[in-house]
Image (cartoon, rainbow, N blue to C red):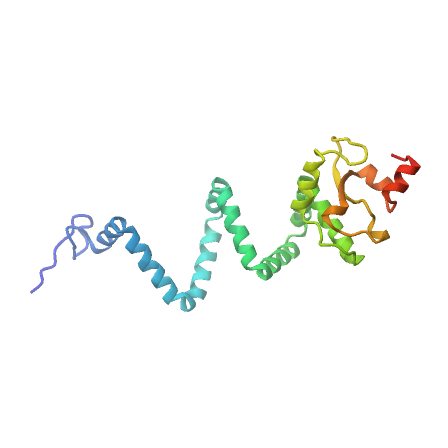
Length: 216
């Protein structure tokens, strides 16, 4: 006949294992065997992934709603790790990311407007690259395109100065040396950084026409 013993950790419980109640014994074993615990948890997750998906989502939402400040504090303290994880998820789920963004903008129009203005002010180079990408698409311009990182590299090559007036104290925009309106390509070999006044004055003129008129 098996005799029920009283654990030392929680005397109110009837059963014990090596002097501890069952729950405390399991926790201690998991701490002493982290690799085996992790492997077991991973096998269990894979085995029951689809069956527990609705429950997992509900639990995650419930926890997020109840611990918003805690989650924000963790993200601030681990910004780099969080950014990598978010970027990885967005790359793996582009359609869901776009749908989430669209839904959030519709639900929070004022916040979306303020957030967009803040981003444009903080990322003028990216903003200019995006605008020119859209313009090139509408004009069906040839070329391989210019990414924000490529345009940043071009700006660094010019030392952060306007390619026309050489000023470094003005915001730089993307300018096509051979204008798109004249058949120029939207390609990294056809772009230079230009301050907004120079870009406006150049408009759709070629570089030779601009120099000959000496308007800059």
